[in-house]
Length: 258
Length: 247
Image (tube, rainbow over all chains, first blue to last red; front, side):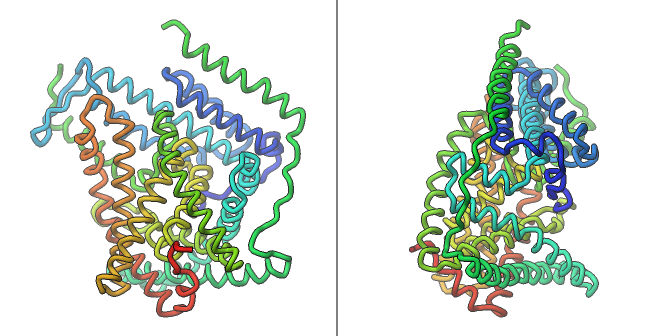
């Protein structure tokens, strides 16, 4: 899972990674909102196509984009099946399972596809945002949106040490495998408990070292954050163009005659 | 209208079970699934718990300045554990534990909600699991339901005189099942359409059964194993961490 997690691409240098995180978060939130409020399939699909194209243009491998989209795709499939059988309307086939008479309807299928397109559209925005913005910048930007400093502090600590602990966990798990720690169900259950316990104790050892290091740097129970810089004027102007554009596209798609 | 053949029925059954047997993805409600009204409702429902967790964290770290570092690092540890693949025997797939039951018995339920909110945001942004508009719903199912059920069961079991191994096992199992039951409830509210609420709820819950019943039991073993390990090797750490949420 951590192979997919790496925000390596967010630390590359390109036009999108150089943009202010707040600008990206405002645009991303607006796009997600437009996708969720959309009642037609076309807007989510446009957003999906644009986001995937941008990811490919800025050099994110197609395989990685696909792997990140697999999760929502499986959800889309389940949504379409569930909605097809749960919305009343004109039936196009029926199934009898365990005494239940299930009717698949055109309206249900259409609704399922609508929901599925929303999932794909909104998730593609999230993936793009995560691919061009490192986590620590997102956390700092959240302060601008009035998220409490305590939350941001915990988020920064969790993010900072996740990869260190993940590397250590992988090493321990490999050592356990070499010693046949996963050769039977009983041994697997024992090994996974020891592995989880080791991760917890190591994280606490690290916490004590981190706290000592932070104390030496003047930490007294709360991180001091710098004031966030003003949003660049060009990006502010850009927002004034992009946001109305999103609204206009949404309105045009929604009110476009059938 | 067409009446389907046995082959078609079998295909649909495999499709439904196959899509349901993707527990890695089912753990979080994906971006775009919840209509805006439901998304706002679940944000409002989970907000007081996050605020309570932040308040408890701030008050306790004023008394013990090292506490935030501990919570951050234990949070990172539990986040790593929640990403560990564990095989689910019946489904024949690998899945991932929630980790909230373990987090709750280590750092307390309300602070565990804060840690869950961070983990869920990271997973939404960098793994496409969950989402921004569904963050409130996911915090409620995984953070609030998972943490409070896990912690409540642990405390109750200990008061009933059960050993900490059994208590940690039950906390792991029931916090996992509570998470998935709440997820089913949230999904039903948003998706039941013309079907009756309870019929849809039972259907979604049953779709989780093939993977989540064994996964919950495995999470119980994981929680019990981890707690036992920490208890036997570093009992002093449990003394530092476990003071409940009463500040």
